[in-house]
Image 1: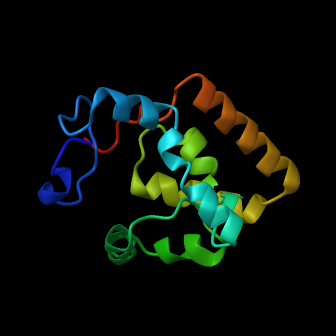
Image 2 (image 1 turned 45 degrees about the vertical axis):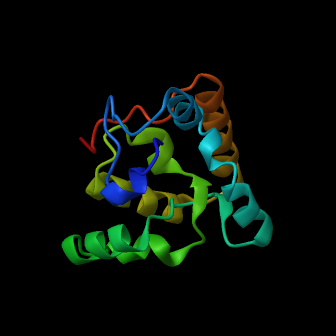
Length: 134
């Protein structure tokens, strides 16, 4: 991010967001900006796979707008999940559907599949190409 980006306040990034530097764009597309989350996994606060944690304000907003949105928090949040891999629109209703589907289908094989797809997305720089937050 550029200097003083935090003064604008929390906003979703969009295509050609002027706050993101060239290095930042690479970090986001490869998900290398998520490396600090590995510490949370190591501490046991997160898992590798599960519904992605949202900022508190965003979670509360969606809980008020979408019935059942809080149900996605019934399991430990993850670094990646069905919504991160398959929801290209990054839309809250779809995110909830994928997160609930993950909770219902949780298994070792599904986690392995999602981890492999996530690693592929990292190597091919396919993260942060969603269109829903414009």
